[in-house]
Amino acid sequence: MAENCSHDCANCSANCTSRTAENTKIKPHLLSRIKHVIGVVSGKGGVGKSFATEMTRRGYSCGILDGDITGPSIPKMFGVHERAHADQDGIYPVSTASGVQIMSLNVLLENETDPVIWRGALITGTVQQFWTDVIWKDIDYLFIDMPPGTGDVTLTVFQSLPIDGIIMVSSPQELVQLIVGKAVKMAQKMNVPILGLVENMSYLTCPDCAKKIELFGPSQAEKTAKEFGISPAVRLPLNPAVAKAVDEGQVESVREDAISPLADKLAQLG
Image 1 (cartoon, one colour):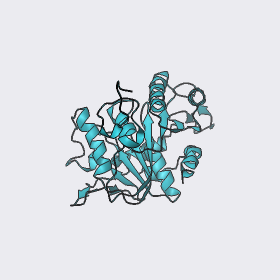
Image 2 (spheres, helix red, strand yellow):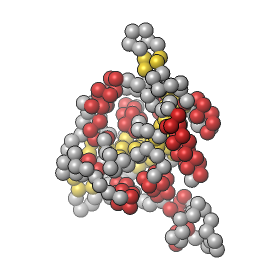
Image 3 (spheres, helix red, strand yellow):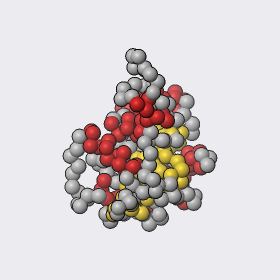
Image 4 (cartoon, helix red, strand yellow):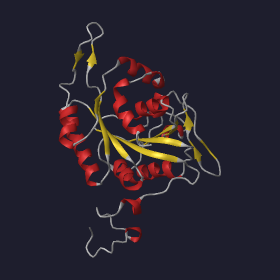
């Protein structure tokens, strides 16, 4: 809390931890209809695409806001190469084969391979514009796929957007666990609910004997979940079929049943 605080967050520029969530949130586009906003925060690589495709299969309308501005990859994963269009009302996201709405910087660039050489303020401003200027049509779950770590984008989303909670993404490596721990503590400090934990690349299933091989060391999912009071915690295998589908822009063709317990929890949000 700032010294001599007036408790009037709406008219105060101080960036203190006492600012109430309600007063610091920005409104979406007037024509947008969004029920739930779910952040995907990771130590190394997110799985927002997996949840969007799974919830779509369950009959929900989903969207993905690609918060990785300098390294946008969501459109390629879904095989989307068309550019977004806009009119006097706003910007319209592109749709995948199954109807997932996507907004990413790559659908605004003239060439997909053009580099984005921007500093923090421009990056965070773009993330906010993807919320305020894009018309999201009848979305049940909007997933915000953020870059790894606890940088500007994560802080902007936590402070500015009305998120219902976040999904933490980890992997077995100790170094990633350290980063995840920081992100978890950041969320807790800012009163952002943690809906569950996904340990990505947790193991590889041997095609011959079906044995689970832990390529990156023993799983840390249960330990991490217990330490921070996160439930559920699920383990995603390292699956060559998923990697191939991503490279070919066919990620919607792959089903990752391991995330079902967490998808069930999202469905309970109503």
